[in-house]
Image (cartoon, rainbow, N blue to C red; front, top):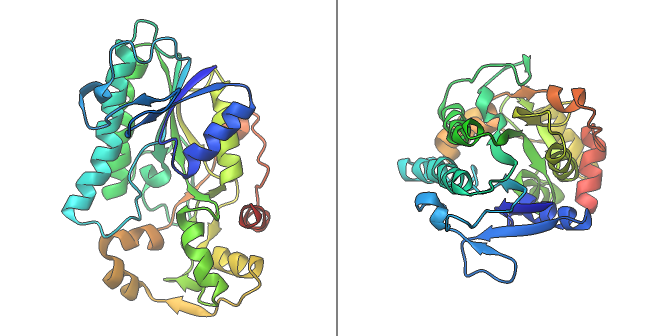
Length: 298
């Protein structure tokens, strides 16, 4: 297959591009800098992504992973606008270019997130659950809606509702690992809030799996089958690094320091990957201890 990938220089995109090439596919990165050989330059904030009408002709699939980091700073009004533009506007631009192609791609795997569900407390949810409330739920709802015109044009669209992707190379685990190694691991808030996570290895494998599943479209949860509480995650990471984790950060301190973004650490999202498991996908790391050990060793 010829697979165009946005966000190809990010944590997931880099790993995915390498894996797809190993599978024998041709990867065409869409980049914002001057393009190199085999790359296409695009502007996510421009109409049609700044792409020529024929830029995606002959491409079999598009994997859309671009988006500013959710935890990249306090959620000021300007930061919220950047988060929305980097997801909603970029998806709208990409879909415009995709549907303008004379021979459009057969499938679009479009980034999304478990933020769709909002705070679910102890309640486990799957892809049939409605959207929750709050900034992230609203953002994800609009993000997925931006991909809808591609489906209306006959393209198979899969919304990749990703949980927290675990990798020592970046993301939440990359941020926390140095603190835990220094003995500064800490439980956040009550510690009872659920974390829906997935190893980078399984996340990339799931995307590769979904590329070949012609019968699957719509939302798919990219999360491991065993969400854990913050307390369990904290203890597991401490054990994996052979360090204590005796500290505790009270909820008011998190709210004071991170503002509205603290909801990412204090809310509970217990999400199950029903559609993946029903389709026959097998997780290499379904349990948190093995996932942390493997990703920390990569």
